[in-house]
Image (cartoon, rainbow, N blue to C red; front, side, top):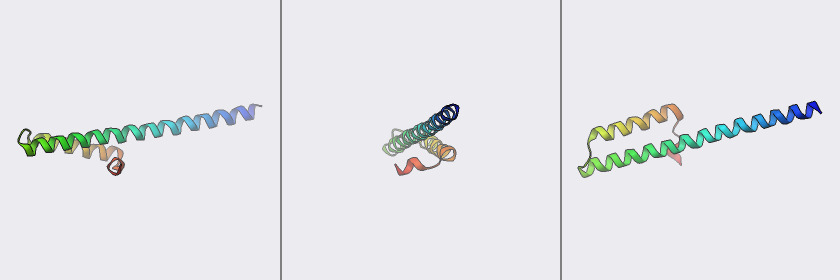
Length: 77
């Protein structure tokens, strides 16, 4: 019986770990998508004359930092 419980506990722990990894991936993708939206909005505002190049550059740097930390998987979604 102890062997069964040990295996069940191990399997549950593995499931929790996999679930947390998937949640982290989804959160990183959402954050990346939000950064892309901000970059697009900054670029649009710059082109329309209501925003500056500095805001666009900051948004681009934020996207690049996110890619460095989490990869570019969110760009394909």
